[in-house]
Amino acid sequence: MGQQQLLLIVLGVIIVGIAIVVGINLFQAQSVNANRDAVYADLNNLGAMAQGFYRKPTSMGGGSNTFTGFVATLPANLKTTDNGTYAFTEAAQSVTIVGVGAGGTGVSLTATVSPTAISIVVTP
Image (cartoon, rainbow, N blue to C red; front, side):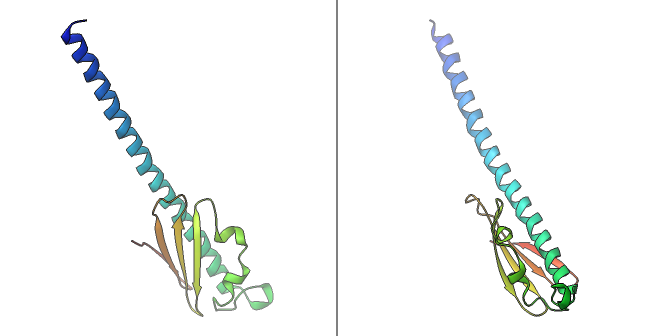
């Protein structure tokens, strides 16, 4: 084999190696984004459930215009899902939910739920 052919083979191997590394990095970034979106959706659902609890009368298993007691009504499978783990802090007129993504992705979002709004922010 000539030197030119060996140089082309080495160059081809280097290009393929770089392409594989770039592909792995793109996949990991997409995985983090997908987990962030899933945690965001879970927080929206949990926030809507909290608002529903707030509006229901006590006789129907609700809070009768208070969030107090909401966390006790949640099933355990909603506190930890395939998407992440959720920690709740409830007060009479608000609930704060911190969602941490699963799989060590570093995703962390905080939702603040009031009787009329759900505010979600990415926490560092």
